[in-house]
Amino acid sequence: DSTVYDGIERIIDSRISGLVVDSKNAQPGVLSAKDIGRALITKNQNTGEIPASGAMQELTLVDQYAPIPNCAGVMLAKKTNMVGVRGRGGIRGIMTKHDLVRYYHENVKDETKIQDMMTYGSFFVQDSASLYDGLAKMLSNQVSRLLIKNSQGEPVGIVTYGNFLGKVFRHER
Image (cartoon, rainbow, N blue to C red):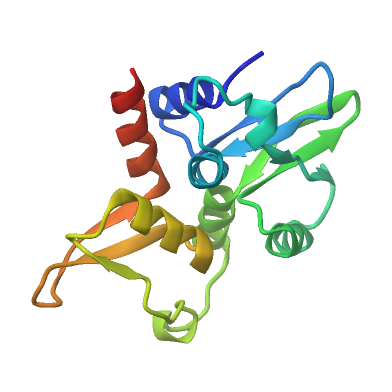
């Protein structure tokens, strides 16, 4: 019964990047800020009219005893920001990209430089670009944030899916 608008409200209120959606008619899914962004671009409807189940992705499950590198590999292969952790009796929790970064920070010691692993590309928009153009660029380049540049080409900010959700939420409220 929940709508995309309800998802936006929960994501903003809880300051999280996505939700596990438990549907009576389908298997549990994930409704992320990115999924909502995709729905905003592809569906010509008010977010209060779009069922959450119509925008969510299937929740990928991993066993609670799976090695962390295997789970990270599943997340990369499925292009998802989270996986459900399955244990006895069902879903026990989730593992997110944030959890992986925290684990890496606390447990991995290496000398890799940021330039050796950063994403290269023109992942920026001009500060005069429309919200639609920024969101479309994020989706087409499969990135979750864009650098914003002014007319002199200087970086002036960053925009994320969360920024778009906040704008939609305030506009449709």
